Image (cartoon, rainbow, N blue to C red; front, side, top):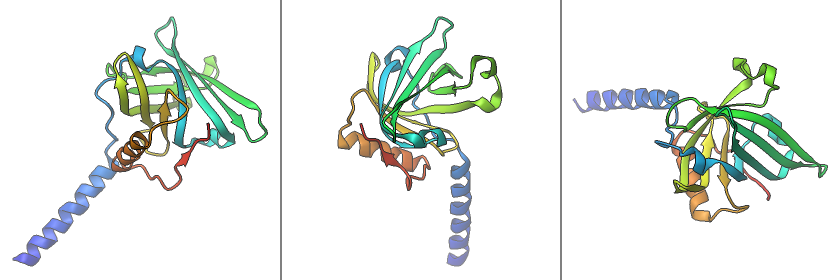
Length: 180
């Protein structure tokens, strides 16, 4: 009887781990867009390939456009010390504003499905009038960013975000802190 119980328990645990591995990470219940807009410094990342050239001073600025979408302006310093910039556009895919589609393609190509990335807000700190830090990741768990309004972030918040990411299924083996 005990062997059957252990066998069934092992099978259930295996099934749950498979299901949770395929479940999408949880987002915050809501993002107040006005509190999210503005300048953010990257504190750490699981980088997208285009970010490999960025070695320091990484920041993103979000602003509301007249059409209701969000302009995205990313910049960083490269190995050669040059400023690299990328301009894109984002929009919320539901009423929570916690799930964004972002594209850095030219305007004429922005509607193509392969040119859009999912950016999900997984955690936030701060008040609804101005968030102070954020954990943002892609639902496929390949890419992740810790953002702050300041060039640094307190250790407790940084470690909490790493715990949330790990609990959400992100592999942090190649996570890197960003030099600011």
